[in-house]
Image (cartoon, rainbow, N blue to C red; front, top):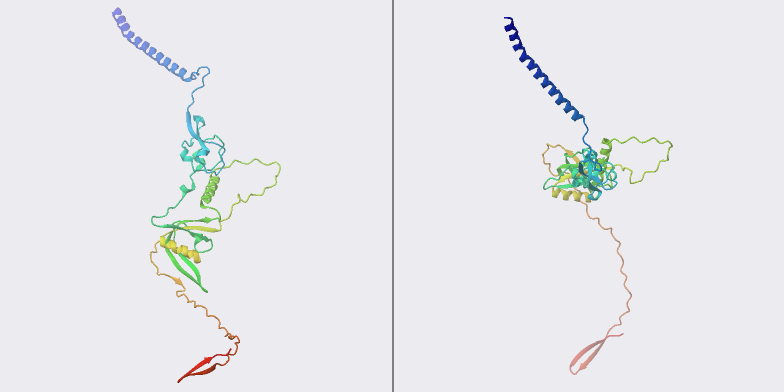
Length: 330
């Protein structure tokens, strides 16, 4: 009985020992694999052979071919394509030359520096905020701030145009254009083109959005130099208004500007009532031609003439015939 019991207990303990041994071997293998993986991950990459530089990825971008000033209008001669290392290329770098041509530079760009999208502004012709409707004409009026509704006009408003001219001693005013849409209403500086005005507006907008680095403090005060006339900002004195009119209305406006002047008045956008032709005064006084002043009669002077000698009559008889001959005396 004793031997049988001991043999049974030994046969039951052998499988448990094998399972424990197998589990220990598996754990040791997993630990070894993890150790090798961590060791390889922490090792530095193999260095390239001696005399050979590591391969660096390069990207073709648009760079400045020379030193470019702020506000310059770029052309294809101002830029070129260059390959720069990937770590030196800005995120908004320009890669197409066609995108840069005719753009306006908002910041200075040194030579060989990559151009970025944030440095460029589309050309003014692409920033035009209006288009002339089909079949209409864009007529430009220049009006002082204090005349008509020039100071309060905005794009999209509807206006009537009143023309004034002199007729003799009377000033005549009449409506020549009705319900004209305002395409542009902006301040105007005499002598400055619209392209230049848009450029100045772009640069001022960029100056507001782009922070400028602080200037170093000057140790000694320096005398101020006079600002050149080209750099002084002229003040706007008039308003430039572009109206969408028909060809016939454009002709009437051109004639009105030649004969006198024009004024714009606002109109309700829901007012479709076509008023009859209005004129003030309704009847133009007729201007009679001035009569010439009476002239004093001028006495005619007769040149003295020599007295005429009386004529002499001679009677001639030929047979039975009688003939009188008049002979003048000198």
